[in-house]
Length: 301
Image (cartoon, rainbow, N blue to C red; front, side, top):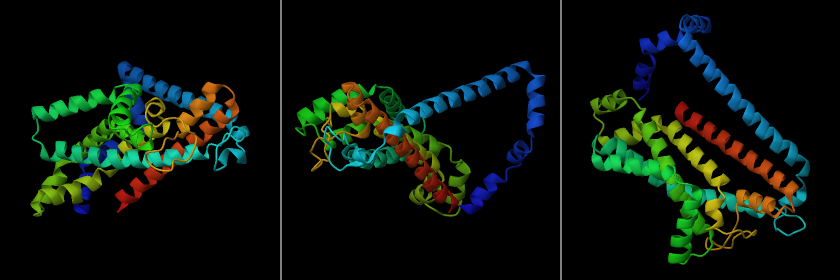
């Protein structure tokens, strides 16, 4: 595998592209007004996006940090401390079980579509179209489906389990599509080299292709995790809004995002709602950092 990677990274075309300096790139842009205009649009979009992000994060931190106090991290919730700790624990539980259901299904489905299904197969095209359609459906629709199927038809009631399955269905297309794109990005020369060395299909997929695609797969899992942590509409209809630590998976419980929504909608604890947003932001950043670190360690092997 290392020999295959070294062969790919030593491509003369890639080295030639990397040798172009910024001054030469700028001269090339200036020779073509259209390219220079596109360059300015890209730079402007980047600055605008970065500026909006800084303003949003700064606003949350300024409004929330002054109201972070020990009472918010008490183990039990009441109207005096408005503790977010039960919601924090529920968020971890909900994220774990949702990923436990969605990640294996999404990754193995993508492996089948890319590595085993025949290219151009109509059935595969239908699956991809369905996944793209599901990815664009509003989360409240998933919530209503979870309410009708998991909560009512299966009799699970408002519970962590119903919420986890609903979120798993919601993020499944995202994980599947990102994994599929990550697998497609692995050069065919890797597979051909593996087959040339006598490895079978299964060994090639799990020893050569899958480790190479890990950063892309983790990117999908990270995006799915972010959607779980920030989801409210689907969970209000399936997991409920009880502000306690659940006794079992069939107990109701609210996540941090639902907790923040409940506090802000009541209008009585706005400061605590901003403080919850700060904790939520820190958790998302921590998850992204940890996932990036894991991906770097895996690809460095």
